[in-house]
Length: 245
Ligand code: ADP
Ligand code: MG
Image (cartoon, rainbow, N blue to C red; front, side, top):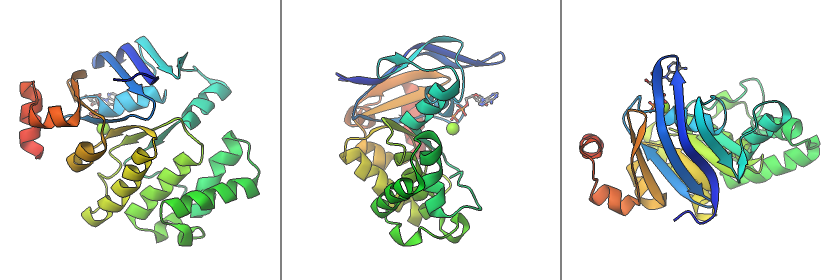
C-alpha cells in the first residue's frame, strides 16, 4: 500500500529501564497517508510517536524519515522536529505570548524567518484553522479547542513533512472536539501525512487509510478501517472495540 514511504520503522525496540515498551515494531507510513493508532492505555502509542520525533531514543532497530536515518543531535535534530511536527493532548502554548507569537516563534528560530515573514505565514495559518480574529489574544483567552487549533497552526508553520497527533482531543469538551477534528480532516484531504493516536473512531473511519492497533508494546493489527472495524482479527482488538464503540 505504501508505495512512497515517508516514515519507516524497522524492528524497533524501546525499553524504559527493564520495561519493554515497544516490541519489534515494523511500520511504514506512506507520503500522504493517514494512519490512526489505537489501543489500550499503556500499550505504547505515545512512546511510538515520541520515538519518531526522537523525543525518545530506541535500543534497537531503525527509523527513517524520507529515506534518511533520524539525526541524533544538534541542528539536524531541531530540523527533524520541524519536519515531523507533533501535536499533544496538552497544547503546550507559551502562556505569556500572544497566539501570533506562539505560531511565529519557532519559524524564526528554526526556519530562520524574519518576523514579518513569519507573522505573515502565521496569519495565513490562523485563518486556515479559523482563528484569524484571535491573533493578538493570549492562549488563556481562548477555549481548549481554539488553543489546540493554534498548536496545529504552529506545527504547520514549520512546513512539516508529517504531523504526529497524540490524543489531540482527549482534553477537550465534546463541542470542541468536532472543531479540531474538522481541521484534521481538512489536512488529511489536502494530503498531509499524519499519524494520529486517538479514540475518535469516527475520525478513524472517515480519514484513516489504515488503522494500527497496539497492545502490550506490539502492533497487533495494521489494516484498512473498513476491515478493522467490520472484522477485527485478534481477540484483543475485539475486546478493545467492544469497550469503546
Ligand atoms: P499509551 O500512550 O499507549 O498509553 P505509553 O507509550 O505512554 O502508552 O506507555 C507505554 C508504557 O511505558 C507504559 O507501561 C508506561 O507506564 C511506560 N512509560 C511511558 N513513559 C515512561 C517513562 N518516561 N518512564 C518509564 N516508563 C514509561
Ligand atoms: Mg498515550
